[in-house]
Image (cartoon, rainbow, N blue to C red; front, side, top):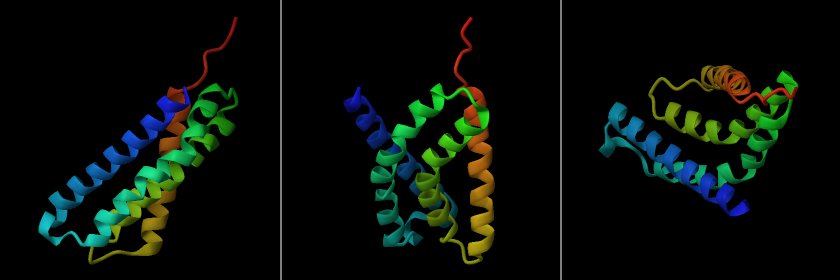
Length: 123
C-alpha cells in the first residue's frame, strides 16, 4: 500500500509539473521559459510526497468541514508551487493578487473534492 502511494505521489508530481511547463510554454513560448521555472517544477515531485497521507484520511472523514480542511492541506503546497511559478512568469505579476487567487482556488478545489470524495454512509 505504501509503495502505491509513493508511486502515485511521484507520478502526480511529475504530471503536474509537466502540465505547468506545457501551459507556461504555450502561453509565453518555450524558449522564453527561464531555468528557474523548470527547476521549480521539480519541486512538485517531493511536494506531493508529504500531503499524500491527507487524501485517504480526508476520504474517510465524515465531517464536511474537516474533510475539506484535509483536502486543503493536501493540495496547499503542490498547488502553491504550480500557481506561483506560473504566475511569476507574467510581466504583470502581483504577489497579492496571486495569493488571493491561490487561496480562492484551494478553497474551491478542497470543497469540490470534499463533496466528490465523501465517505458512504453506513446503514
